Amino acid sequence: MKKIPLIVVAGATASGKTSLAIALAKRFDAEVISADSMQIYRRMNIGTAKPTMEEMDGVVHHLIDFVEPEDSFSVADFCEKAHSVAEDIKSRGKNIIVAGGTGLYIDSFVRDIDFDGEDCDYTLRQELEQRAKNDGAESLLRELAEYDKISAERLHPNNLKRIIRAIEFYHIHKKPISVHQEETKQKPSRYHALYMMIDHPRDVLKKRIDMRVDIMMESGLMDEARELYECRDVLSKTAAQAIGYKELFGYFDGEMTLDEAKEELKLRTRQYAKRQLTWFRKNEDMNYLSPENAFSEAEKLVEDFFNKK
Figure (cartoon, rainbow, N blue to C red):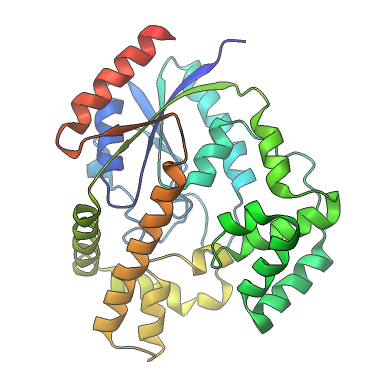
């Protein structure tokens, strides 16, 4: 079976991947599949830097703004929808660009990981969630490290859902989820991907992030965050942890001043960007673009990629 070619524009938040993906889509007659775990949510526009209709400039975008913040949505759900969208785009003779900063979404989709048959132990899951509340996620990470050191080192304490899933998987299947993930990587994928990301110097990316937060605040992030705050008790766990909102929740609760919340938002965003870069730089197939010539370098890469397919 001939593999489906994908152009993957990855990278950290505020790196310019959205505008690059749109420019490439216009150049190569493509549609964009968004791989962003927060831009999927409705009513979360400013804080997730969701592209506006004007910014999309006529380029069709898929898998943004279609899930209510109260609803859960997993990486398996994303992959199921992304595969369907990719087949539809291909059937219409268009090229496909995958753009986003959620590395787990990108890797799971491009590598065509099979999520069928993933068993669940809801009783154990509830017990682990309660333990995390009582003792902190770090206690679960320490347990995980006893039998799956790779996953324990890879997962951040804030990513409680994945920590619990890794422990749950081990208890059900009697093997580490990291081993399972490595096994699935060996299976052939239906896709052939060209990876790229804009490589900003660290100090430049920091300035871009700080500037983006300032613009978000000026564009109405406070009002958007307050609307979510009013329904915070029914938000899904993922939506409730979205950077750009939970920091302002602290201000609404009276736990910090607005300036402190704003600085916390900048700090958390920079920390998230660092984790994104760590993830993507592990990809040996990644092509790094200079910020000054990102489009021309990307254009040449795509032309060569299509000529070889």
